[in-house]
Image (cartoon, rainbow, N blue to C red; front, side):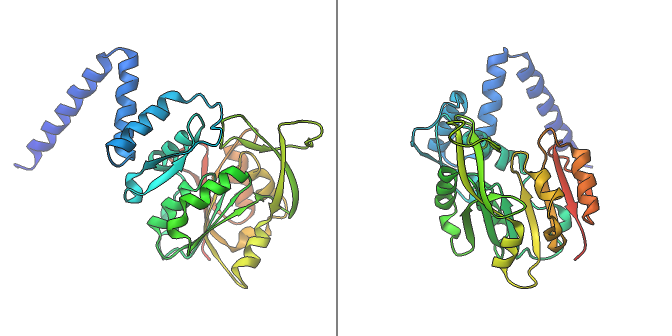
Amino acid sequence: MTGGAPERGSGARRDRLGRLAASLPAPLQEASRLAYAAARITKGPRSFATYLRLARIRRHTGSEGKVVRVRLRELGGRAMAIRPSTSDVDTIWGTFAGRYHRPPAEALDRDLLLIWDLGANIGLTMADLAVRHPRARIVGLEMDAENAALARENTSAWKDRCEVIEAAAWPTDGPLAYVQLTGATSGHFVTGATPEEDASVTTTDALSPYSLLALAGPGAVVDFVKIDIEGAEIELLRHNAGWAHRVRTMAVEVHAPYTVDDCRHDLAELGFETRVDPRHWACVIAYRDL
């Protein structure tokens, strides 16, 4: 009997706080939400203040090589390097508040030993996976050179089992051209243009999942694959996709014009059961018994 009263009291207090927050002017509501998010994500007053400052800037004009460091609570207070005036601050939020890069429940019936992070960006998802799965070897592909360099720095504490490869995830190996939107450090997409035709085009190497399997060794099984590659997921899942038969679980972030229904259909064709991740309407979970 006595155990129920505090819960009702706590609920009433939350309701009062919610009504109070709703009564505030919109700018104060936004500031309070931002402060709450920063408190959840960061570790220590300096990192709290840095995150708030960067989240308010969000001009996405490019970092010009500048880097600041933010200590993150779910990494045990370890400092991660990010660039001001870029979408790196949004990547912090997506990783440590969204959490939809994490393996689904269907993957957790055993220790995860091999994880692929396709679209590793600046390595925050790799770092989080390394902390949460201490026996796993984590291989990340990131096609942008600046992002890949930061990913190596941000995963250096786990360098014995985290490997960042500067390459694009693609159905076949070879050269690939892409465009990066200014300041949008997670906004890269593959293009058919050349640097001669468009100054915003950069070239990189592409690496197929078959090549990653060869690096893992004969008979390797991948326990979990995170795919967030800005639209190239349709290529990986529809073309030369036999590699997927050696994967137990996936989380695929879907980008238009590819749809969630398209993705679920393609994964079903590859032998997976699927569901939509409740944490993100455009993320498809795939799983199978291996």
